[in-house]
Length: 104
Image 1 (cartoon, rainbow, N blue to C red):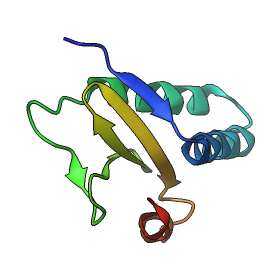
Image 2 (tube, rainbow, N blue to C red):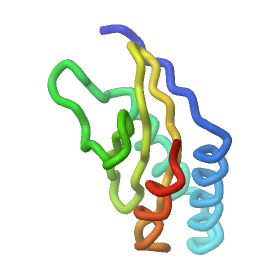
Image 3 (tube, rainbow, N blue to C red):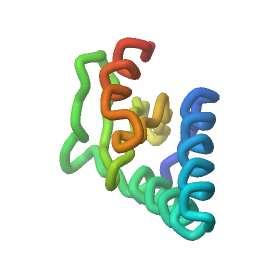
């Protein structure tokens, strides 16, 4: 199995850390945030496009998956995954549509 390279855009990186920061402050602990981060990274690494494509959005070549309550939007080329945006669906349920409108 070829190792995938994961590249986070500035936007996605910022949204990720904003979400992790929120849960660290809310829970008064980094345990949940650390676990959430590791699980999202693991899910990205384990995406297998040869078996099935992930959920497609209305935007061309933009896909997403949801882990717990966090939606991760991405595109891919060969062995590289480009994480475009991240949405915490519990904190802002309408962000899914807003993100899709603003994605390239």
